[in-house]
Length: 372
Ligand code: GLC
Image (cartoon, rainbow, N blue to C red; front, side, top):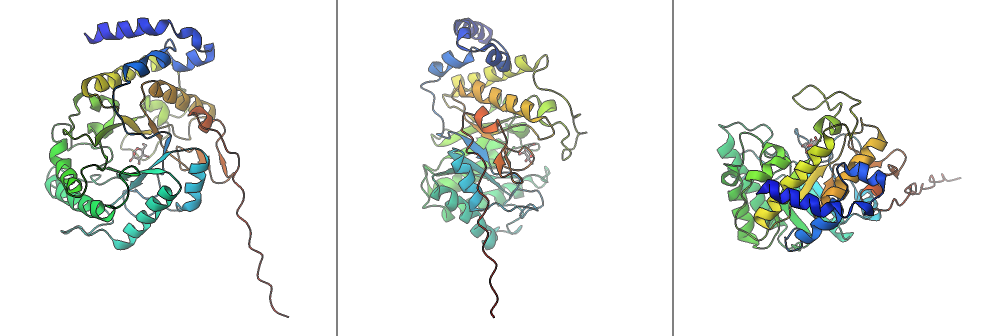
């Protein structure tokens, strides 16, 4: 059935090939025709109205907690993101390290003030916010899993109450970034269900986002079973081909993938097409459109390659009406460069936005004159 469906789809798409330039066709990898036909197929499927989205990653979500060293995220960053035309920000936050390990797991009040300030500053600029609970299970073991799930539910209870009056059209909760063993799609809702229940005691309509096993990679969609709740939304992360997007990455348990692996080698196009088919199958099965909560390529790849990658991801997944949140604003999978005060050439254009040019330097306050 699936093979026949794909064959039919490919046949339908061939007719549209002429709409794209040869360069676009090459970038799209296969026959370049996914763009025109697929949206009508997904027209009745529902998804969160995310629009253009970027992760404010590598600021508040580190495994050891607190703020990353270096530039702190502030209102000028949100101005910058808004000026670039983004509609939504995903804000990854480590709440585990910033809450009491003992029940009732009170969140550090100062941390909550800091996060609230950013959430409200983003909303004040017309940005929607995905508040993503990051690294909550980073060090969990099978033995500590039950206690950790109660801890997570206590944290979400506090957050749900704290943010109860923020409009549900502007603030969305992501229960846990990239679930991984000992969490998998079989026990996912056993672990996350109590958190969802706490949020639902406060609001039936607050959008809640859930990703599946194995770091929410695209394959996780195949067995992802979400609760029957119209305001629960699926997500996945897309870093394929991993050997391209993570070349030189040093923070993982595996040896860093070698630097220099280009994008677009044999097999990349087929891989993307089969991943597109996986996402389409999920949409067909559930009627819900998942969004890509993270995608992008590390700075160790040359900029033109990174531009081609994000352009290809943007075009292929947008054709399915699947929104993308790019990883990440200004650190290591960089879109914006603090030193030059510029969005990296080509990156915004590749995802359908207009580069607003360099940001003006901050106004220097004249040095106070000393008295006579
Ligand atoms: C995940 C990790 C984050 C990493 C990113 C790209 O979100 O939590 O630390 O930078 O994936 O690998």
